[in-house]
Amino acid sequence: MLSAFLKNLHSFPKPNSGFRFVIVTGNESCDLDSIACATCYAYIKSKEDLSDKAIYIPYCNIPESDLDLRTEATFWLRNCQIDKKDLFFTGSLDWLLTPEYANKLSVILVDHFQKESGNAFKFCPVVEIIDHHPLLSSYRKPDTCKYFLVEKVGSCSSLLVHELFNRLPRVLTPLELCQLLYGAILIDTDGLSQQALDIQKATQKDVEAVRKLEAFAGAELLAKGTTRATVYSEILAAKFCIDGLSLWDLLRRDCKKVFAGSETHPDIVCSTITGMDFKELLEHREFSQEATRFCEEQNARVLVCVTVGLTSLCTCDQSHDDPIATPLPRESRRAVVVTAPAQQRNLLDSLWAYLMANAKEFLLDRPSDGKCSCSNSGGEVESGVYVALITNKAVTRKQLIPILIDFLLSQK
Image (tube, rainbow, N blue to C red; front, side):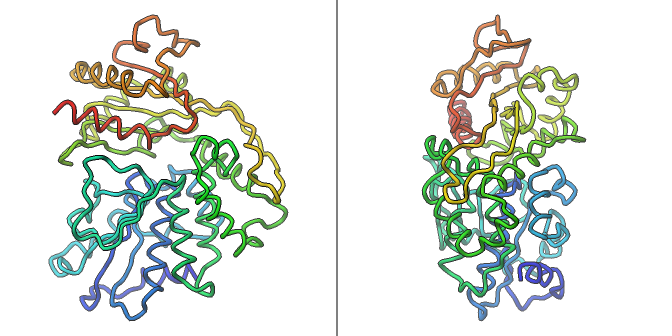
């Protein structure tokens, strides 16, 4: 059912000015959550009102070749029997970027709440927004937005699950779509472990969404004796598998640009590097060169890396009757590494001082092992490179970016 929906979109006759076109786009990091959300909501909107002369297209805002960098996404798409060739990537919808369709295009944002400068459809009116990221105090909803759902949950896909079951009859609910959403929620919420719930990385709404999926499609989701925990463990292992990826690949596979006000160019680019501890990053022989190159390519002045190093990974088979009782046994360490080209040293120092003053409840600025003995003050491990451990397990880039934006606003 889902495969047919995607293939039909690809076979749609072009040009065709008899329809409106609505681009359902996830965020620029294009992780599994964004892919699942965009695919799900485009499907919901397409099936909800068959009399609506609109074509809803899920859009991945990256080149097709870059999907392979997102190892957990490619792994789970294969498991869901979704061919990546059936998705829509940067460049695949350029035929809509012509004057003929100028008044027939609009966008729906999922897994983010404001337009991104790198999106080809940034000039289109935003008609709906579904997201789970914290809103900025300065944020103003677009006047064109007719449906606005922003709620704090661990995974945006959880919001889409509730939309799916509230808005479509069960007979129109594809099992492979349920499986896609299921994996996206589990990887974003640490498998819905009790620890994730305790630190509010997962919420009861995430739990309810997963239970709805299991009640509807449990036989498909948990086939051959697998459990919620083993599904999560498999996706997590795929996410941490960085074999064959260069440092350049790791910097760009999950990055977001951070703007203050006008999105003419980013001042900060923030990359989450999963599968590499901060020590490995700093010891990488190409780190300084690639960091400077990455800032230049992104037209950014500072690079902030959130590293997630996993020191052990094993599968824990939990009871399906009580799948969230115990967190998966693993040891991971998160850190923030901040650097900048030499000419941006003043801005780098100011940003670090701001982070230490405004994020001290979850940042520890003195890692104490190996080359990171931090004999210098303020977490500077070498000239122009600052490091801080993240001490709060609930903190990810999602919590860091609003602080980075506040810093940029303070510099205006």
